[in-house]
Image (tube, rainbow, N blue to C red):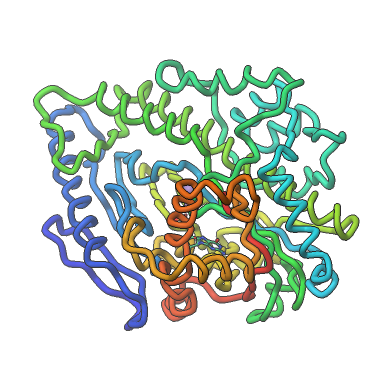
Length: 495
Ligand code: 5GP
Ligand code: MN
Ligand code: MN
């Protein structure tokens, strides 16, 4: 089967890469992964220094998705299953970064004549103070403790004009995407408390409703092709219909939770075990470590819950912009898919996904009703490129995981291509809305600002990413997920 590669390694961990022959795999990412596998030795050293363990802690299996590329410490597109231990760094810094997709009943043909107005409206909502989300301390606390259901139990949040349009608690409360947090951690993560008390109900939040930089986005797309009629119909997708796709994470809150994880792992490190060269610090799932683990997992859940709330608001802002230009529309959540998260199991295994998305099959999601046709897998392409929705097949070889994007082909920071004029044409053609409007006369004179802005955006150009077609085809050929619909971009709001 030419869609899988096995990676032999000194640690003798089963490592498999899902990628067809047309998908480039960076050798730097392979090198980085080999370094990660040295954690197998760290786990053995920790076990020797910790008497009374019931299971031998180990890395059980690693899967790399077709968008695999070098990250910071651990490559993006790594799924890592452990036994008897968890590895905070294997989740990535942006805890619960994820993709939120809604299917609307609006057609692209009806929207087309209004795109100039919509662009201005969205610029105002996202970047010019139009986003005014008033949250009470109760709603904030509810969100951090219990995700969207917690937020909505405290009443529907308001915007400057009153209630937000089309909040549909029924669609959102049955999401799996919430993590129950028992409270808030103290110490390095006390910033969670600060966030709760910072709003006070009357002032508007300055953090929630922001997209985050770089590769995060809020995008309007339309269904350009259907590959699986039954699943598409069940998900509310039809040719020409407008789709909302949001990619965002936990902003600064995820970093705080990670700092808590690092602090707790370091504080619980047994004397006599040297700090590992690869700087990856696992936490054993032993009895004595429970309080430290609990502190990390609480901060982790707080950040994860914040992220899903943020995606909820970003999607609402897109809907509010659409409603302003075409009137009320119907819209329904297809899925919220986290790609930086860990999934502990009762059997002592932990699945970590860093830049990889769950792709469970029909039976894994029977509780949502058979009409789901498998877990929705969301694979965005890049700015200006098509994106795909697929249905997961629950493949055990892939650890029930798929890629969460096309993945970078060129590392960020590498020499950018294309002239300024080409970039400007591209941004206009694909209606990319950014925080900086370089046509604004007040900005146009600031060469330093405009140059830095162009440099960042060139790093996000389509040529910097892999072609999404072969990436999606790898998933299909490997029986990881089947394509349901293809989406073309209409307008992209970048963080
Ligand atoms: P991440 O940042 O979570 O690792 O990757 C997200 C994925 O989103 C990237 O691999 C890339 O394929 C995709 N992506 C990045 N920017 C955009 C964009 O502006 N629009 C779309 N549709 N996809 C994007
Ligand atoms: Mn992110
Ligand atoms: Mn992400």
